[in-house]
Length: 296
Image (tube, rainbow, N blue to C red; front, side, top):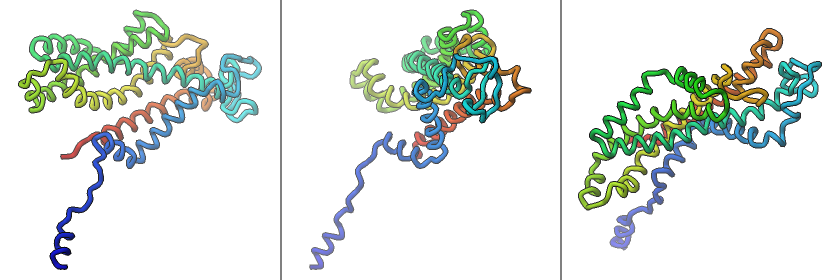
């Protein structure tokens, strides 16, 4: 009986199945209350923008000069009306569509272009890396705001030109991060082992490099969404982005600037939405970055 008891005692305890890297990232992210609240706010804003045609109480383009600049809480105008008598709640809901689109689309395009440039330059190294990165450095000589304004001014106002301008602004930033991470990865032992075993460059990048560099690049790209939204709103505010009468939060700030003394709360609503959305993306990005940190 003692031998049986000893053998039972020596049996290894059952271990839980490994969650994997991304499973552990998700688990840590769920434990971050700030990131979860920020994600909830983002999802709520996205759903409100997507379902704007069904939940907006009025036509966002239909105005009435006798109902202009109504205060918040006016019957029929829960968030007041703008300078042309258009329902603010409806325009904020529809404006979220363009504001989110102009915030996310340039980052997606820059993520694809910048990651490709940075990974290729970082993996090949040598003169290709030098020429590519010195060209990228030229764009860093200009502040992002001034570069976006200059490009939009040269291309002209419009949604497409705003996307192009913001994409050009963000490509160098993402390319720099991608090149830095790829340069570190290509010197790792498993990459050298794959190269010695005869694996081609494309195979090494696809199998060993992409899986390790896309995560940090993605986290950095998510932090640029808030910057993209602010820059896009700034372009619209200056008349270089969305054209009237399209509802967009930056353009709404511009058109309501003359009403700041009459209805300050109504005039501040688009700015409040820009701030809330931008800070939510920033907080979620910070939580995602913390969750992806692997502590040795």
